[in-house]
Image (tube, rainbow, N blue to C red; front, top):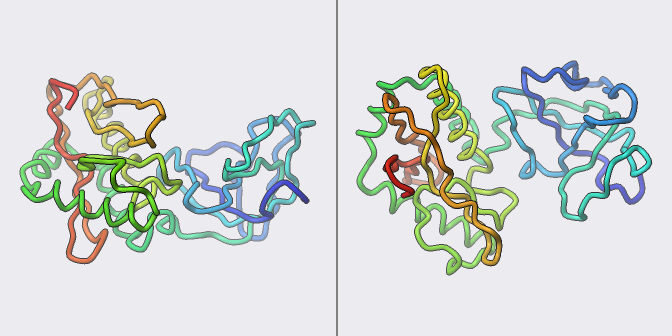
Length: 251
C-alpha cells in the first residue's frame, strides 16, 4: 500500500446500488469481480464523499487491494481525495448525517422533506421566505469562508449559492445544498411526468476558473419550485437554500 494514499477511508453506497458494495456489512471484505472498473472509490475524508443518489449508507473501510496503472486505472492527481480499490474491508457504519456537519441530522430531515415535496408545500415555502433570508445566508457563508481561509473579496452576493469551488467541503453543510437542489428537481419531474428544472445561482469558483453560469432549465409551467428552508446552521441564524428565482430569466 506504500505510496497509494491512506489505508482507510469512506464509501457511500446508495440503496439502489447494484455493485459489490451493495452487500456491504461490518466485518466483511468486499471485492469487485476481476480488476476492471467500476472500482470502489474510497474517499480519504468525509468532505470529499459524493452522494450520487439518496438515500444510502456510509461505511468506514480499510483498503485491502488498491488498483494500479496495470489494472487500467489512470494516474490520479495528488489532491484527488480518493483511492480506487478492488477490495475493501468494511470496518463499521458511519451515520450519513456526519457528511453534513454539526447539524447533520437536521440537514438529513430537509433532504427527506425535499424528496416528498409537493406543489402546495413548495408554494408555502416560497410564501414563508423571510425578507431577511438573503442577508442571513450571506452572513453564514461569509463566516464559513473565513474559517476556510478563503478571501472574502472573491465573492459578492452569496445568496442562493449552492457551493464554493475553492473548498473541498463546498458549503457550511458540505454537499447538501446541491443534493437538495437535485432532489427538488427530481421531485418536480416526478410530479410533472416530464423533464423539469430549476433556476439557481451557480457554483462559485475561484477567480480564473471557467464559470458554469446559471444552470439552465426547462421550467414546468405548473410547477414553480421555490425554496427549501434549512435552520440551525449557526446560532440564531436561518439559512434558505434554493431561494426563489425568476424562471423567465437568468437571475
